[in-house]
Length: 462
Image 1 (spheres, rainbow, N blue to C red):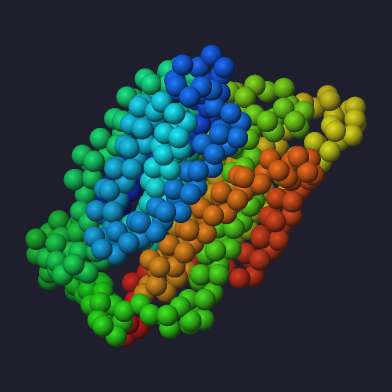
Image 2 (image 1 turned 180 degrees about the vertical axis):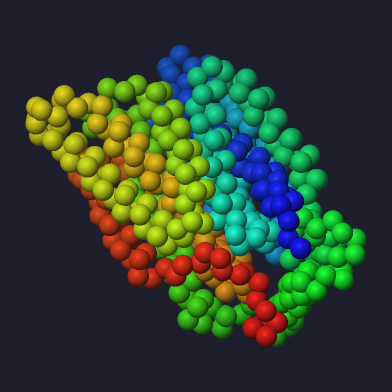
């Protein structure tokens, strides 16, 4: 009974929810073009005067603290109101971010704004993988999962481009169009069948399941294949809602649960401490330090474009060669790229003259490294979690991993300048390279392949 219209509807729903992700990505990229404006001695935006270096570092990193809170808040909202309503609620803190940026007269207002942006990001990384896992066919689940990274990167690149031509206040009016569009489009797609079944809305759940399977036949109830698949889902949800099936501490003590959560946290650790997020955040400084003469604006646009190309490439490979292999290739590739970059920087600092003839090499190395990051390590850790965790603790385990990634992100951004000052750029990048080599090796041994795995347990297994 499954048809191409089912795939179309799954892609449509994934694109709709990612409108807010696109806008959030632009919010992430907002720091790059507008922080220099705020730090300008002649700036007239803030009544408190130009932003200092220390204040600028907090504007960049406080987003991670908002993400930490967002992971908890949206995990609760998912349990209380379901996935669709939780995703719709993302428009509230995100719109508050842009409005606060526009009205800000003090750097403390910008701290609040960035915290709101973090709330949105925390909500996105909690709710989106759950939504995609619920609605998608296992054949395209990996591709739909990579939309998270693709749309986020498109948003970042979009802000890099418009940030060079729009003023500080004008850009807010442009960006507020997206959350408004998102709010309207969300009315067009149904909630996930799993959420509706948990709420006791069996008829609505059946209609939702038909929508995401692309089934229009009003007599579909006579189809044994549809009936069996929907009944399996309904019985699984009913069993999970029983009192003796409530999530308890004992549910986290099983071998599958422990391994799933351990892998999830480790994936997030390598995702952040591979160094790419820090490298991209401080890209202008890094290009100047390693010996490249590329301008900051050009370098950021190149990096944003490379990330998108890498994410698009992952569409081809994610369900073709599998999550495990692609994750290992990506991680080892990042390790090699950072190692070469560290070596180049070491030679520049130590006066190796012949490297001055290859000032184009850092951008080539970093482009290849960012590409490999976008192909695998950027997105796989987020959407693979629902495939690794037992269904009963999926939301709780997913939240734990999302909380860990925000903590790791905050630490990574804050310590990078300190590491560079203490052990130079090549030392900091060398450490990140070593973490990637170790992480890639561990991935090969502990992560199971989840390509094609069914996320709905059969009644006998429930």
